[in-house]
Length: 422
Ligand SMILES: Nc1ncnc2c1ncn2[C@@H]1O[C@H](COP(=O)(O)OP(=O)(O)OP(=O)(O)O)[C@@H](O)[C@H]1O
Ligand SMILES: O=C(O)[C@@H](O)C(=O)CO
Image 1 (tube, rainbow, N blue to C red):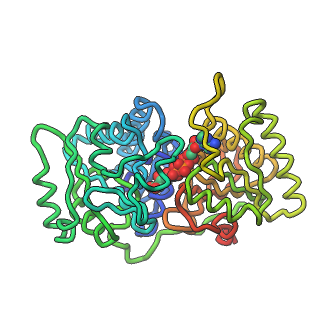
Image 2: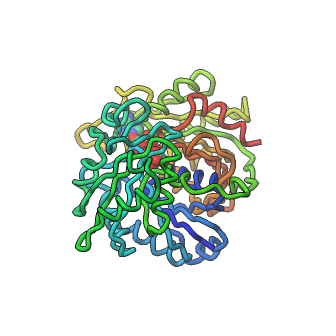
Protein backbone atom coordinates (compact mmCIF):
# COMPACT_ATOMS: atom_id res chain seq x y z
CA UNK A 1 0.00 0.00 0.00
CA UNK A 2 1.27 3.46 -0.88
CA UNK A 3 2.56 5.14 2.28
CA UNK A 4 4.27 8.19 0.85
CA UNK A 5 3.33 10.48 -2.02
CA UNK A 6 5.90 12.87 -3.46
CA UNK A 7 5.17 15.97 -5.52
CA UNK A 8 8.39 17.07 -7.23
CA UNK A 9 8.75 20.37 -9.05
CA UNK A 10 11.07 18.96 -11.70
CA UNK A 11 11.99 15.60 -13.20
CA UNK A 12 15.51 15.30 -11.82
CA UNK A 13 14.17 16.22 -8.41
CA UNK A 14 11.62 13.42 -8.70
CA UNK A 15 14.21 10.75 -9.41
CA UNK A 16 16.41 12.30 -6.69
CA UNK A 17 13.66 11.82 -4.08
CA UNK A 18 12.87 8.35 -5.44
CA UNK A 19 16.58 7.41 -5.21
CA UNK A 20 16.58 8.25 -1.50
CA UNK A 21 13.31 6.47 -0.77
CA UNK A 22 14.62 3.38 -2.58
CA UNK A 23 17.80 3.63 -0.47
CA UNK A 24 15.61 3.53 2.62
CA UNK A 25 13.86 0.39 1.39
CA UNK A 26 10.68 1.90 -0.07
CA UNK A 27 9.58 0.44 -3.40
CA UNK A 28 9.14 3.66 -5.35
CA UNK A 29 7.81 4.57 -8.80
CA UNK A 30 8.01 7.92 -10.53
CA UNK A 31 5.18 9.12 -12.75
CA UNK A 32 6.06 11.73 -15.31
CA UNK A 33 3.16 14.10 -14.91
CA UNK A 34 -0.04 13.54 -12.94
CA UNK A 35 -1.01 9.86 -13.22
CA UNK A 36 -4.19 8.94 -15.04
CA UNK A 37 -6.84 6.76 -13.36
CA UNK A 38 -5.56 3.84 -15.43
CA UNK A 39 -1.97 4.44 -14.26
CA UNK A 40 -3.09 4.65 -10.63
CA UNK A 41 -4.20 1.01 -10.73
CA UNK A 42 -0.69 -0.09 -11.65
CA UNK A 43 0.84 1.89 -8.77
CA UNK A 44 -1.13 0.48 -5.85
CA UNK A 45 1.51 -2.10 -4.92
CA UNK A 46 4.24 0.52 -4.37
CA UNK A 47 5.36 1.90 -1.00
CA UNK A 48 5.91 5.36 -2.44
CA UNK A 49 5.07 7.23 -5.63
CA UNK A 50 6.65 10.48 -6.79
CA UNK A 51 4.80 12.63 -9.32
CA UNK A 52 7.33 14.53 -11.44
CA UNK A 53 6.05 17.92 -12.56
CA UNK A 54 7.62 20.68 -14.61
CA UNK A 55 6.42 23.33 -12.20
CA UNK A 56 9.58 25.00 -10.90
CA UNK A 57 9.50 27.85 -13.37
CA UNK A 58 5.98 27.43 -14.79
CA UNK A 59 3.44 30.25 -14.35
CA UNK A 60 2.39 30.21 -10.67
CA UNK A 61 -1.26 29.26 -11.36
CA UNK A 62 -0.24 26.28 -13.52
CA UNK A 63 2.33 25.14 -10.96
CA UNK A 64 -0.28 25.25 -8.19
CA UNK A 65 -2.97 23.49 -10.26
CA UNK A 66 -0.59 20.71 -11.28
CA UNK A 67 0.69 20.23 -7.71
CA UNK A 68 -2.82 20.00 -6.28
CA UNK A 69 -3.83 17.57 -9.04
CA UNK A 70 -0.77 15.46 -8.20
CA UNK A 71 -1.61 15.47 -4.50
CA UNK A 72 -5.21 14.45 -5.20
CA UNK A 73 -4.04 11.57 -7.40
CA UNK A 74 -1.66 10.41 -4.65
CA UNK A 75 -4.49 10.57 -2.11
CA UNK A 76 -6.58 8.37 -4.37
CA UNK A 77 -3.75 5.83 -4.10
CA UNK A 78 -4.18 5.88 -0.33
CA UNK A 79 -1.10 7.94 0.54
CA UNK A 80 -1.42 9.72 3.86
CA UNK A 81 1.99 11.37 4.05
CA UNK A 82 3.25 13.77 1.43
CA UNK A 83 6.63 15.17 0.46
CA UNK A 84 6.76 18.50 -1.34
CA UNK A 85 10.10 18.14 -3.16
CA UNK A 86 11.83 21.29 -4.36
CA UNK A 87 15.46 21.96 -5.08
CA UNK A 88 18.14 21.54 -2.42
CA UNK A 89 19.39 24.94 -3.58
CA UNK A 90 15.88 26.38 -3.14
CA UNK A 91 15.67 27.33 -6.84
CA UNK A 92 12.87 29.88 -7.06
CA UNK A 93 12.15 33.57 -7.58
CA UNK A 94 10.46 36.05 -5.18
CA UNK A 95 7.16 35.04 -6.81
CA UNK A 96 7.70 31.33 -6.36
CA UNK A 97 7.08 28.68 -7.09
CA UNK A 98 8.13 27.03 -3.81
CA UNK A 99 5.85 29.18 -1.60
CA UNK A 100 2.67 29.04 -3.72
CA UNK A 101 2.98 25.27 -4.25
CA UNK A 102 3.57 24.58 -0.54
CA UNK A 103 0.71 26.94 0.42
CA UNK A 104 -1.64 25.04 -1.90
CA UNK A 105 -0.56 21.62 -0.59
CA UNK A 106 -0.95 22.80 3.02
CA UNK A 107 -4.44 24.11 2.28
CA UNK A 108 -5.41 20.92 0.46
CA UNK A 109 -4.24 18.80 3.42
CA UNK A 110 -5.66 21.31 5.91
CA UNK A 111 -2.46 21.25 7.92
CA UNK A 112 -1.13 24.23 9.83
CA UNK A 113 2.64 23.62 9.95
CA UNK A 114 5.24 22.29 7.56
CA UNK A 115 8.98 21.97 7.99
CA UNK A 116 11.28 23.40 5.33
CA UNK A 117 14.38 21.22 4.95
CA UNK A 118 16.54 21.90 1.86
CA UNK A 119 19.57 20.15 3.42
CA UNK A 120 21.07 17.22 1.50
CA UNK A 121 24.48 16.68 3.12
CA UNK A 122 25.60 13.95 0.69
CA UNK A 123 25.61 16.63 -2.03
CA UNK A 124 27.06 19.36 0.18
CA UNK A 125 23.79 21.17 0.92
CA UNK A 126 23.53 22.07 4.61
CA UNK A 127 21.49 24.59 6.56
CA UNK A 128 22.96 26.44 9.54
CA UNK A 129 21.36 29.43 11.30
CA UNK A 130 18.75 29.21 8.58
CA UNK A 131 21.38 29.84 5.89
CA UNK A 132 21.77 27.43 3.01
CA UNK A 133 25.31 26.37 2.13
CA UNK A 134 26.55 24.62 -1.00
CA UNK A 135 29.75 22.94 0.11
CA UNK A 136 31.79 25.64 1.85
CA UNK A 137 29.94 28.51 0.22
CA UNK A 138 26.76 30.33 1.10
CA UNK A 139 24.15 29.66 -1.58
CA UNK A 140 24.38 33.30 -2.70
CA UNK A 141 28.15 32.98 -3.26
CA UNK A 142 27.82 29.66 -5.09
CA UNK A 143 27.45 29.13 -8.82
CA UNK A 144 23.67 29.25 -8.27
CA UNK A 145 23.86 33.03 -8.42
CA UNK A 146 24.36 32.61 -12.19
CA UNK A 147 21.47 30.17 -12.80
CA UNK A 148 19.79 31.12 -16.09
CA UNK A 149 16.21 30.71 -14.77
CA UNK A 150 16.37 31.08 -10.99
CA UNK A 151 19.49 33.02 -9.94
CA UNK A 152 19.91 32.62 -6.18
CA UNK A 153 21.36 35.77 -4.66
CA UNK A 154 20.36 35.24 -1.01
CA UNK A 155 21.10 32.41 1.39
CA UNK A 156 18.74 32.95 4.33
CA UNK A 157 15.94 30.45 3.72
CA UNK A 158 13.47 32.46 5.82
CA UNK A 159 14.21 35.50 3.65
CA UNK A 160 13.91 33.43 0.49
CA UNK A 161 10.57 31.87 1.39
CA UNK A 162 8.86 34.83 3.11
CA UNK A 163 8.18 36.86 -0.07
CA UNK A 164 6.66 33.75 -1.70
CA UNK A 165 3.98 33.08 0.92
CA UNK A 166 1.42 34.89 3.05
CA UNK A 167 2.07 32.48 5.92
CA UNK A 168 4.54 32.91 8.76
CA UNK A 169 8.08 31.62 8.23
CA UNK A 170 10.09 30.75 11.35
CA UNK A 171 13.26 28.79 12.02
CA UNK A 172 14.66 26.27 14.46
CA UNK A 173 18.41 26.23 15.16
CA UNK A 174 20.78 23.31 15.02
CA UNK A 175 21.12 23.20 18.83
CA UNK A 176 17.45 22.21 19.10
CA UNK A 177 17.83 19.52 16.45
CA UNK A 178 20.90 18.18 18.24
CA UNK A 179 18.88 18.07 21.48
CA UNK A 180 16.80 15.33 19.87
CA UNK A 181 13.38 14.61 18.39
CA UNK A 182 11.42 15.45 21.54
CA UNK A 183 13.08 18.89 21.81
CA UNK A 184 12.42 19.53 18.14
CA UNK A 185 8.78 18.46 18.47
CA UNK A 186 8.38 20.92 21.35
CA UNK A 187 10.02 23.72 19.35
CA UNK A 188 7.78 23.04 16.36
CA UNK A 189 4.71 23.03 18.61
CA UNK A 190 5.71 26.46 19.94
CA UNK A 191 5.58 27.77 16.38
CA UNK A 192 2.06 26.49 15.74
CA UNK A 193 -0.54 29.22 15.60
CA UNK A 194 -4.27 28.63 15.96
CA UNK A 195 -5.14 31.31 13.44
CA UNK A 196 -2.54 30.84 10.70
CA UNK A 197 -0.27 28.45 8.91
CA UNK A 198 3.47 28.38 9.58
CA UNK A 199 6.60 27.15 7.86
CA UNK A 200 9.58 26.23 10.00
CA UNK A 201 13.04 26.19 8.43
CA UNK A 202 15.06 23.57 10.31
CA UNK A 203 18.86 23.51 10.43
CA UNK A 204 20.61 20.27 9.45
CA UNK A 205 24.27 19.53 8.84
CA UNK A 206 24.34 15.76 8.55
CA UNK A 207 22.17 12.69 8.14
CA UNK A 208 21.86 12.26 11.91
CA UNK A 209 20.17 15.69 11.99
CA UNK A 210 17.85 14.60 9.19
CA UNK A 211 16.97 11.46 11.16
CA UNK A 212 15.97 13.65 14.11
CA UNK A 213 13.81 15.84 11.87
CA UNK A 214 12.21 12.77 10.28
CA UNK A 215 11.41 11.35 13.71
CA UNK A 216 10.01 14.64 15.02
CA UNK A 217 7.76 15.03 11.97
CA UNK A 218 6.61 11.40 11.77
CA UNK A 219 3.00 12.50 12.33
CA UNK A 220 3.09 15.43 9.90
CA UNK A 221 0.97 14.89 6.80
CA UNK A 222 3.27 17.20 4.80
CA UNK A 223 7.01 17.77 4.82
CA UNK A 224 8.83 20.02 2.37
CA UNK A 225 12.41 20.06 1.22
CA UNK A 226 15.17 18.72 -0.94
CA UNK A 227 15.42 14.95 -1.02
CA UNK A 228 17.76 14.70 1.99
CA UNK A 229 15.01 14.40 4.58
CA UNK A 230 13.96 11.11 2.92
CA UNK A 231 17.32 9.70 4.04
CA UNK A 232 16.31 10.52 7.61
CA UNK A 233 13.78 7.68 7.53
CA UNK A 234 14.91 4.52 9.30
CA UNK A 235 16.51 2.04 6.89
CA UNK A 236 14.33 -0.97 6.12
CA UNK A 237 15.78 -4.27 7.37
CA UNK A 238 15.88 -5.68 3.82
CA UNK A 239 18.14 -2.86 2.55
CA UNK A 240 17.53 -0.73 -0.57
CA UNK A 241 14.43 -1.54 -2.64
CA UNK A 242 16.19 -1.57 -6.02
CA UNK A 243 14.62 -4.03 -8.41
CA UNK A 244 16.39 -5.61 -11.38
CA UNK A 245 16.14 -2.97 -14.08
CA UNK A 246 15.61 -4.03 -17.70
CA UNK A 247 18.46 -2.91 -19.91
CA UNK A 248 17.28 -1.27 -23.12
CA UNK A 249 19.84 -2.15 -25.78
CA UNK A 250 20.65 0.63 -28.22
CA UNK A 251 22.81 3.68 -28.80
CA UNK A 252 23.74 6.10 -26.04
CA UNK A 253 23.54 9.87 -25.72
CA UNK A 254 24.25 12.53 -23.13
CA UNK A 255 21.97 15.56 -23.48
CA UNK A 256 23.06 18.44 -21.27
CA UNK A 257 20.96 21.61 -21.12
CA UNK A 258 22.15 22.52 -17.64
CA UNK A 259 24.45 25.48 -17.15
CA UNK A 260 25.29 24.47 -13.57
CA UNK A 261 28.91 24.33 -12.51
CA UNK A 262 28.99 20.56 -11.92
CA UNK A 263 27.56 19.95 -15.39
CA UNK A 264 30.06 22.36 -16.95
CA UNK A 265 32.83 20.41 -15.23
CA UNK A 266 31.38 17.12 -16.47
CA UNK A 267 31.26 18.52 -20.01
CA UNK A 268 34.88 19.65 -19.75
CA UNK A 269 35.81 16.17 -18.53
CA UNK A 270 33.94 14.34 -21.33
CA UNK A 271 34.45 16.72 -24.27
CA UNK A 272 37.73 15.20 -25.42
CA UNK A 273 36.69 11.62 -24.70
CA UNK A 274 33.27 11.48 -26.39
CA UNK A 275 32.07 12.64 -29.79
CA UNK A 276 30.70 16.05 -28.81
CA UNK A 277 28.63 18.88 -30.29
CA UNK A 278 27.78 22.18 -28.65
CA UNK A 279 24.39 23.67 -29.49
CA UNK A 280 24.66 26.76 -31.67
CA UNK A 281 22.03 29.29 -30.57
CA UNK A 282 22.28 31.26 -33.83
CA UNK A 283 21.67 28.12 -35.88
CA UNK A 284 18.76 27.14 -33.63
CA UNK A 285 17.21 30.60 -34.03
CA UNK A 286 17.63 30.43 -37.79
CA UNK A 287 16.11 26.95 -38.27
CA UNK A 288 15.79 24.70 -35.25
CA UNK A 289 14.49 21.55 -37.01
CA UNK A 290 17.29 21.75 -39.59
CA UNK A 291 19.90 22.02 -36.82
CA UNK A 292 18.38 19.02 -35.00
CA UNK A 293 18.50 17.07 -38.28
CA UNK A 294 22.20 17.99 -38.70
CA UNK A 295 22.94 16.83 -35.15
CA UNK A 296 21.07 13.59 -35.75
CA UNK A 297 22.99 12.87 -38.95
CA UNK A 298 26.25 13.57 -37.09
CA UNK A 299 25.22 11.29 -34.18
CA UNK A 300 24.34 8.53 -36.66
CA UNK A 301 27.85 8.76 -38.14
CA UNK A 302 29.40 8.47 -34.67
CA UNK A 303 27.30 5.42 -33.76
CA UNK A 304 28.08 3.79 -37.12
CA UNK A 305 31.79 4.04 -36.27
CA UNK A 306 31.49 3.25 -32.52
CA UNK A 307 28.06 1.79 -31.71
CA UNK A 308 28.57 1.63 -27.93
CA UNK A 309 30.09 5.09 -27.49
CA UNK A 310 27.77 7.81 -26.21
CA UNK A 311 27.50 11.09 -28.10
CA UNK A 312 27.37 14.29 -26.07
CA UNK A 313 25.24 17.28 -27.07
CA UNK A 314 25.42 20.21 -24.67
CA UNK A 315 24.41 23.84 -24.32
CA UNK A 316 26.83 25.67 -22.04
CA UNK A 317 30.49 25.26 -21.15
CA UNK A 318 31.20 28.75 -19.87
CA UNK A 319 29.12 31.29 -17.98
CA UNK A 320 29.70 33.64 -20.91
CA UNK A 321 27.42 31.39 -22.97
CA UNK A 322 24.39 32.22 -20.84
CA UNK A 323 22.09 34.59 -22.63
CA UNK A 324 20.19 36.61 -20.03
CA UNK A 325 17.88 38.26 -22.59
CA UNK A 326 17.01 37.20 -26.15
CA UNK A 327 17.86 39.45 -29.09
CA UNK A 328 14.97 41.72 -30.16
CA UNK A 329 12.14 39.55 -31.51
CA UNK A 330 14.07 36.32 -30.77
CA UNK A 331 13.03 33.40 -28.59
CA UNK A 332 14.73 32.96 -25.20
CA UNK A 333 17.81 30.73 -25.31
CA UNK A 334 16.42 28.43 -22.62
CA UNK A 335 13.36 27.62 -24.74
CA UNK A 336 15.49 26.97 -27.82
CA UNK A 337 17.84 24.68 -25.92
CA UNK A 338 15.01 22.69 -24.35
CA UNK A 339 13.24 22.31 -27.69
CA UNK A 340 16.45 21.35 -29.46
CA UNK A 341 17.43 18.72 -26.88
CA UNK A 342 13.87 17.34 -26.84
CA UNK A 343 14.07 17.20 -30.64
CA UNK A 344 17.43 15.42 -30.43
CA UNK A 345 15.93 12.90 -27.99
CA UNK A 346 13.13 11.89 -30.35
CA UNK A 347 15.30 11.96 -33.47
CA UNK A 348 18.13 10.04 -31.74
CA UNK A 349 15.55 7.51 -30.48
CA UNK A 350 14.26 7.07 -34.03
CA UNK A 351 17.89 6.39 -35.01
CA UNK A 352 18.17 3.65 -32.35
CA UNK A 353 19.26 5.45 -29.17
CA UNK A 354 17.78 3.80 -26.07
CA UNK A 355 20.04 5.02 -23.25
CA UNK A 356 20.07 8.68 -22.31
CA UNK A 357 21.92 10.51 -19.57
CA UNK A 358 20.24 13.90 -19.29
CA UNK A 359 21.65 16.83 -17.31
CA UNK A 360 19.29 19.42 -15.87
CA UNK A 361 15.79 19.30 -14.44
CA UNK A 362 14.04 21.50 -17.01
CA UNK A 363 15.99 19.75 -19.74
CA UNK A 364 15.00 16.31 -18.38
CA UNK A 365 11.34 17.39 -18.31
CA UNK A 366 11.49 18.40 -21.99
CA UNK A 367 13.37 15.25 -23.02
CA UNK A 368 11.17 12.77 -21.17
CA UNK A 369 7.96 14.47 -22.32
CA UNK A 370 9.25 14.33 -25.91
CA UNK A 371 10.00 10.60 -25.56
CA UNK A 372 6.44 10.19 -24.23
CA UNK A 373 7.36 8.12 -21.19
CA UNK A 374 4.78 8.07 -18.40
CA UNK A 375 6.46 6.13 -15.59
CA UNK A 376 9.97 5.24 -14.40
CA UNK A 377 11.20 2.37 -12.24
CA UNK A 378 14.54 2.96 -10.56
CA UNK A 379 17.63 0.84 -11.08
CA UNK A 380 21.21 1.26 -9.87
CA UNK A 381 22.30 4.45 -8.16
CA UNK A 382 24.90 6.48 -10.03
CA UNK A 383 25.60 9.21 -7.48
CA UNK A 384 23.82 10.76 -4.49
CA UNK A 385 20.41 11.77 -5.86
CA UNK A 386 20.95 10.17 -9.30
CA UNK A 387 19.86 6.71 -10.47
CA UNK A 388 19.43 4.88 -13.70
CA UNK A 389 15.78 4.21 -14.43
CA UNK A 390 13.74 2.30 -16.97
CA UNK A 391 10.65 3.58 -18.73
CA UNK A 392 8.50 2.47 -21.61
CA UNK A 393 7.38 5.04 -24.15
CA UNK A 394 3.86 5.20 -25.56
CA UNK A 395 5.16 3.54 -28.76
CA UNK A 396 6.32 0.51 -26.74
CA UNK A 397 10.08 1.18 -26.83
CA UNK A 398 11.94 0.78 -23.56
CA UNK A 399 14.56 3.32 -22.45
CA UNK A 400 17.18 3.61 -19.75
CA UNK A 401 17.36 7.14 -18.47
CA UNK A 402 19.49 8.85 -15.86
CA UNK A 403 18.06 12.26 -15.05
CA UNK A 404 20.93 14.13 -13.41
CA UNK A 405 20.34 17.28 -11.45
CA UNK A 406 22.52 20.04 -12.84
CA UNK A 407 24.82 20.20 -9.84
CA UNK A 408 24.97 16.50 -8.97
CA UNK A 409 27.45 13.81 -9.93
CA UNK A 410 31.20 13.24 -10.17
CA UNK A 411 33.20 14.95 -12.93
CA UNK A 412 33.47 11.72 -14.98
CA UNK A 413 29.78 10.75 -14.80
CA UNK A 414 29.20 11.27 -18.56
CA UNK A 415 31.82 8.66 -19.41
CA UNK A 416 31.85 6.40 -16.33
CA UNK A 417 28.12 6.45 -15.58
CA UNK A 418 27.35 3.85 -18.24
CA UNK A 419 29.15 1.07 -16.41
CA UNK A 420 26.01 0.36 -14.42
CA UNK A 421 24.16 -0.60 -17.62
CA UNK A 422 25.52 -4.07 -18.05
N1 LIG B 1 22.98 29.59 -23.31
C1 LIG B 1 21.89 29.59 -22.52
N2 LIG B 1 21.34 30.76 -22.15
C2 LIG B 1 20.23 30.76 -21.37
N3 LIG B 1 19.61 29.65 -20.91
C3 LIG B 1 20.14 28.47 -21.25
C4 LIG B 1 21.29 28.38 -22.07
N4 LIG B 1 21.57 27.07 -22.23
C5 LIG B 1 20.68 26.38 -21.54
N5 LIG B 1 19.79 27.22 -20.94
C6 LIG B 1 18.63 26.85 -20.14
O1 LIG B 1 18.99 26.80 -18.79
C7 LIG B 1 18.06 25.95 -18.12
C8 LIG B 1 18.84 25.03 -17.23
O2 LIG B 1 17.92 24.43 -16.39
P1 LIG B 1 17.97 22.91 -16.07
O3 LIG B 1 16.91 22.71 -15.02
O4 LIG B 1 17.89 22.06 -17.28
O5 LIG B 1 19.40 22.71 -15.43
P2 LIG B 1 19.82 22.94 -13.93
O6 LIG B 1 18.98 24.00 -13.31
O7 LIG B 1 21.28 23.07 -13.90
O8 LIG B 1 19.43 21.54 -13.31
P3 LIG B 1 18.59 21.22 -12.01
O9 LIG B 1 17.29 21.92 -12.13
O10 LIG B 1 18.48 19.74 -12.08
O11 LIG B 1 19.42 21.72 -10.87
C9 LIG B 1 17.28 25.20 -19.19
O12 LIG B 1 15.99 25.77 -19.34
C10 LIG B 1 18.13 25.44 -20.42
O13 LIG B 1 17.39 25.39 -21.61
O1 LIG C 1 17.27 18.90 -4.88
C1 LIG C 1 18.07 18.99 -5.82
O2 LIG C 1 19.11 19.66 -5.77
C2 LIG C 1 17.71 18.33 -7.11
O3 LIG C 1 16.92 17.21 -6.93
C3 LIG C 1 16.96 19.27 -7.96
O4 LIG C 1 15.83 19.56 -7.67
C4 LIG C 1 17.64 19.87 -9.10
O5 LIG C 1 16.72 20.20 -10.08
